[in-house]
Length: 611
Ligand code: G6P
Image 1 (cartoon, helix red, strand yellow):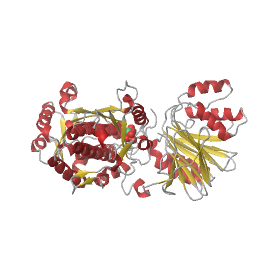
Image 2 (spheres, helix red, strand yellow; image 1 turned 90 degrees about the horizontal axis):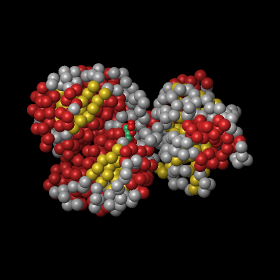
Image 3 (tube, helix red, strand yellow; image 1 turned 30 degrees about the vertical axis):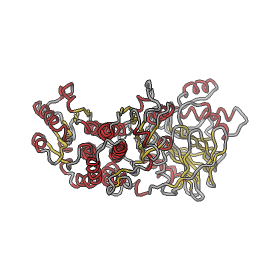
Image 4 (cartoon, helix red, strand yellow; image 1 turned 120 degrees about the vertical axis):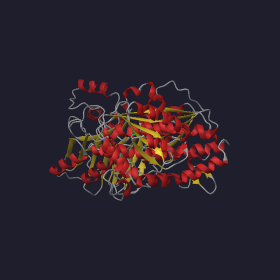
């Protein structure tokens, strides 16, 4: 949540910052601001999007080659001009931007108020700014040391960047729990929450770790721990390119990302699905496969869409590898009585690799001795670095807040992991392995086939654009797909939707069905097909409007449904990879018809780095 960009170099900092904030806007977009160092400390901030900040900046015509910027997702204090970052102390000598939550801010604020500080807004960040000011003014330590001291006093999480008007050449940055990296250019240096603002200028980055602090100038950077131990950091080379983070002719990132799935699923399997040799090779798990296969049970922890892919993983691991699996919301797991130890394996799944709850679950499982494997998309992210081992999804940057290509890539990785474990445990036959390897190889082509003609989906979207509710039903591997379809609709079109296991419908949701209720039934799994057909009959008897996702061969489903969206036939256990595509598109087109902000839905953020 919240995006930070900072720049020190020879360019106009405001240009780099505004462009960078636009790229980070997926992390939050309720207010934005920047601080620039010139003869003075220039502050511009506004409620609204980065576009609004750019408009305001045009009027101010800000100058300066050193500065910081922020795009906010509100935690403490409503989104307004005052609560927007950057924040300053009473004497406005420095400006601070912050991502994360200072948990003990209230106690600190009360203490500072007694000492005469007055606050203009409600944010925890403003309290941190005043704390730094208080420490600096009341002692004889320099400003950098005051920042260090303040950070040692606060509880919670932070990624911060600070500029000070009497040190016009430098930015102080620090991190605990919220990601920050330094972009290493030639005569220019950057700081950012992720690599997207930096990639246009340099491919070299240094990742800050928790409780590290750095000073950045146009001539270089120095990193230390908060307790003053100087560090030599490894410089990483970024593999992404600028094209990947632009829309490439699509009206929205979400649509671009849906259409990329033919390629991204292929990229995810490249070098891992060895068709000729009928085997899977996952280099990231080398040395850990035995422990995975000997696990008493696998616990999958994740949030949001990643949790849904985890649910598909549960079915896959149990069917292909015969390993018991439990899937946990990371936010629940972290505060439960955790019965996990060294006999268990945890798999954490996260597109961003920064989700606070998933990270906390990972740390807790590690602390209790479990092996923790990761499935992440963002290379070098905190979760990817903290897991014992793992497999990247290689889906490329996902910018649309509603996750699409990350889901199919996660399910692809889980499928490959389950197949690998199944072979290793000798419970997956040669024959089935051969069939699945061939089928997996063909998934990208089948995804492209679905995407070739989306007119049927657009028609359904037009029919139901103003429906107030939707029900999504699926069984077995496609129950999680029903949940994912409902989530997509809620996220971007603000229509209430529920996902349910089809057979559970009769225990409650059936009461909701009347001639106005659209019911999306995913009927693409053969072994439960007859049962799903009965469920469809039950909906039809109550005049529900049935939209079916069925595979080409299922004529009985096509006959019963009012709208039938067919997908190519595929082995049951791979069907989520195809069945989810029409659902992503359905929610996309409904949201566009309703004129919703598809890539930046209200109240959401792509990367949730707070609890
Ligand atoms: C947010 C995003 C979702 C995502 C979830 C988990 O809620 O809006 O799209 O599924 O976080 O994120 P992660 O990066 O851990 O997969």
